[in-house]
Image (cartoon, rainbow, N blue to C red):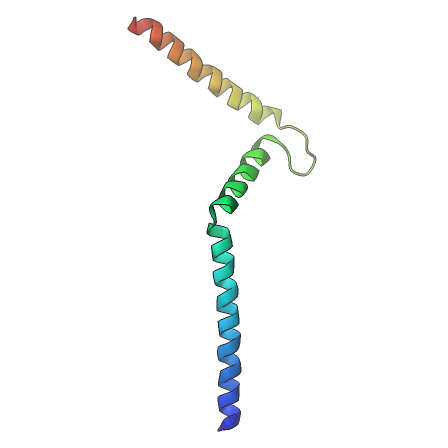
Length: 82
């Protein structure tokens, strides 16, 4: 009986340790600074190749085109409203 009890206690301790590690990981991943850091890295990776460090000109040109298009739209809309 004591062998079963000590075996159960070891299993409970191991489960408790795994649960504590999981909770720590979730707290880390849900921390606002971690989320912001992850998103910034994701955005940077969209414009710069993480392996070579070279800029991804096709994505940069697409983003620049969108910005120019939106600014042009607002400029034309502002003139039409006047």
